[in-house]
Image (tube, rainbow, N blue to C red; front, side, top):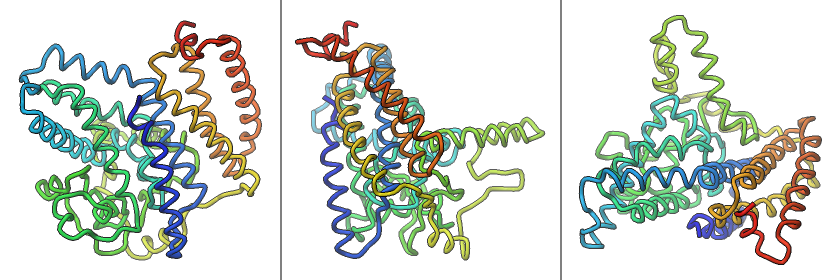
Length: 389
């Protein structure tokens, strides 16, 4: 059973607690439309990175470890092995994360996590479709080194779970822990578009990496959240593809081949005259006061989205727990429907004319898929039969 799938109820419970505490403190840290978009991105990340690609990505690490590992780290004392595994994973995470902010083609995937102009626990779940693909090459040296797969996978889960709680505005500085650990204060800096905060505090668990490699910045001024160029959309699909389109357009517009390549592999802020930085002055204040909020959905549409969010969450948990036993055809159909569902929610928020026609088609496809499951399952377990279909 997936550790992340097991943690989903705890994630939602903590989001609810944070929302209640913020309301009691009269802090406005959640917007329904933005939070649903955050969670929609996370759903897509799990569908693509785990359900569709999880087996292949895991097999790649295991294959390198099995054939090419240089050292028998499994022979270490278990405590040393786990300490080394967590530290090594977090060290690699730092460099992958830093590269994802400094190399544009990697930023095209990671940018999704930074789009939200809010900062709360739901933002922690706002993950990109393709970061599992961009991160794997960074971690394969651990397999070559000899870090056993079970240590690697669990260290990755620990690193991911740790970073959930630091996405909050409700926890202030934590005294001496700030010197060693990544904390909400440090990570608020990372999500800020303030000029002094841009490209800072890449740590996963241990802030010591930023202190060692010159990327640390303490929280002083209040951060303003988002990206320097706002997404201005509640579509999780658009969030995952828009920067790739922008890069393609910019590259085509360059006359020199060197500049065309820099668009893809240079800093995301690079342009022929230099590098764009973060926001200052009036522009920063304007972004703080006016967030994208083009919500044309009424209370009934929001209730409709909540109902379907519950059903989709259940479906995703089932897929995460049983994807290895299901047929490829069923996985592709179910995954496409999940992604389509989250896309429709963005369309409903923004009042897009295509949203309801697509939703009707989606509901018909869901009905057809459920009928297929029912007709194939009979009195037996549907997961067993779908695996054989």
